[in-house]
Amino acid sequence: MKLLLDKLGLQAVNQGSCVGPDGWLDTKGPVLTSYNPTTAEPIAAIVQTTPAAYEQVVAHAQTAFKSWQEMPAPKRGLMVRDLGVALREQIEPLGELISLEMGKIRAEGIGEVQEAVDICDFAVGLSRQLYGLTMHSERPFHRMYEQWHPLGPIGVITAFNFPAAVWAWNSAIAAVCGDMTIWKPSELSSLVAVAVQHIANRVMADYGVSGVFSLVTGAGDIGKLMTEDTRLPLISFTGSIPTGRKVAQTVAGRLGRSLLELGGNNAIIVEKDADLDLVVRGVLFGAVGTSGQRCTSTRRLIMHQDIANELTERLVKVYQQVPLGDPLTEGVLMGPLVTETAVAHMQAALKQAQQEGGTILTGGSTRPDLGPQFVEPTIVKMPAQSPVVKTETFAPILYLLTYETLEEAIALHNGVPQGLSSAIFTDSMRTAEAFLSAAGSDCGIANVNIGTSGAEIGGAFGGEKETGGGRESGSDAWKAYMRRQTNTLNWSRDLPLAQGIQFGEG
Ligand code: NAD
Image (cartoon, rainbow, N blue to C red; front, side, top):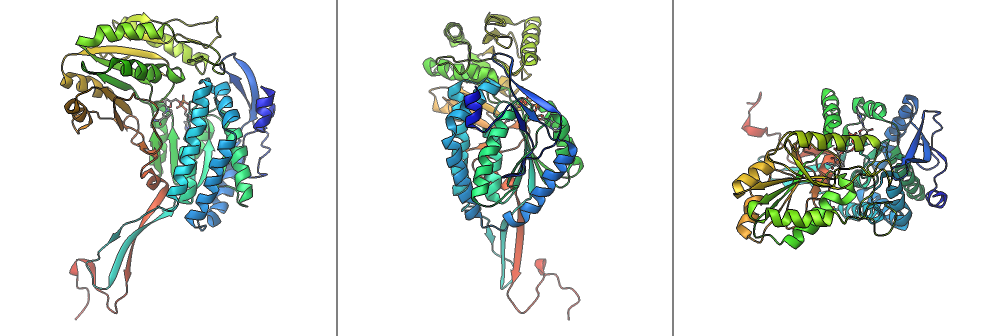
């Protein structure tokens, strides 16, 4: 473990507040210990940000913004290109640190860093494509167009489960847009954030800039300072629905902007003509991957009644063969849950499911023999979409429901408060198109013959309803990180007014 920490520049005790190269602040703040969820043993500690240090970080970012916003976007892109290269160089140790600190398996940890690298590549291309429209003016010898300007220092508050990728979704895009990001990672995965900041610092040093990527650490108190801070025009928040609701209300109270990436309750509909081999693989990755701790994890399986028995039997069989254990061990597919509280939440949800008429078909138990935070991947057959099924429990629980008609399946699918990711497995083009139509899935992401998790970065990522409506990363999500300005330019020798208004003339 020491070797891994050394590779990433981590020590037994690390500062957790940084404004850029050589900019680690000695805050004398409270010390947070980061624990390995596999063993419940400490990994290293982080000195958290105090309110005074937070002030320093924001003031620094405000000053640094003045010159960063004036650097041409393609030049900003060059720095982000090098950030991608630097992350790629550290892909293995950083991926392993993600596994060590939050418990996803090594392949997923490395995949997460790969995602951060891909986003940097995407952002580099974007740095030459921050396009605005031009419009024809109704007035002669006038020109109208819009341009996109940087917003300023923005606050990025992230969840524990994607400690590197979500930062990259925001920070790589924001950087080419000319913004500074002040990142507050989850208190459950802050060591990864310190390691990422070291990498970002080296790249900023090469370009002689600072404050483009800054770090603050702590729990909700520091997050709250950010949401209340009028100097941060945008708060990009990734986390649970209850916390997101508080963040949204606070930011709206000061008329700031928030970009919300909140919880999901993702379902797969399986039609009777579906390729069940694909379904089993898609469900396994979606429901068991990351121990059910992805925002896009598959939580509900809505099966046509004709194939329900066969599919259930096949899933129960593969679930019973899922290798559990240390996420850094080759061959393991499911590691621990992030905290003992998460284990308790899973147990409480299973109890509630049984009270609501559910039957546990496989799993359901904790695995103290492996460690205090290990649980079995669990399948629960439900008689109806009862309250527990409508709630996101961040654990590997898959609820089974059945249907007769596609209308019924879509009604069940959409009958939850969340709206992040969704999928249908079918060989029928008509059924697939119905699912993707306006009257079909109400989610931000809708897939055909692909599970609910594992999105590519090129598409805009996010969801509807209580998932918060925000879009990060791909497509034109960059617009959230900029302010739009409409410009009208008169090159005539007259001053005609819009709508033909005559004012004080003749
Ligand atoms: P969480 O809501 O407990 O914490 C998220 C972040 O909010 C943390 O950094 C935390 O310190 C901070 N925070 C806590 N109180 C705050 C406050 N009052 N003001 C500001 N910030 C505050 O979430 P979590 O348990 O870390 O993550 C799991 C949740 O995140 C799940 O619901 C999951 O679906 C969601 N998630 C969503 C996406 C997405 O893209 N939609 C991605 C990853 C995770």
